[in-house]
Image (cartoon, rainbow, N blue to C red; front, side, top):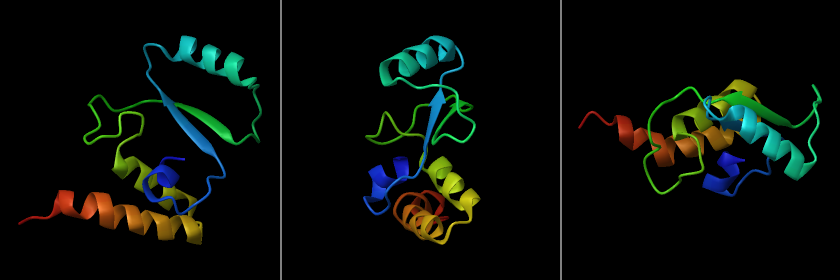
Length: 100
């Protein structure tokens, strides 16, 4: 979903939500109740514990870091996702690592 938010190029097939470890129990319960979610190993919503401890730069407070979006897309090995990963790398990551 974050990749779609950044590029508007790919319809998301799944949703990964990273939760703050300090509040994940309450947050998950609230999200499940509000959206009528139930446990399903084959479902298209995944909840993971947020593992970074910094503010995401830029004007995107509800998105994970761009490098994580890129890595998650690469991990799928899906050709369309790889295409979008390249777009994200070029737009949001290449300049961040420019040694100039």
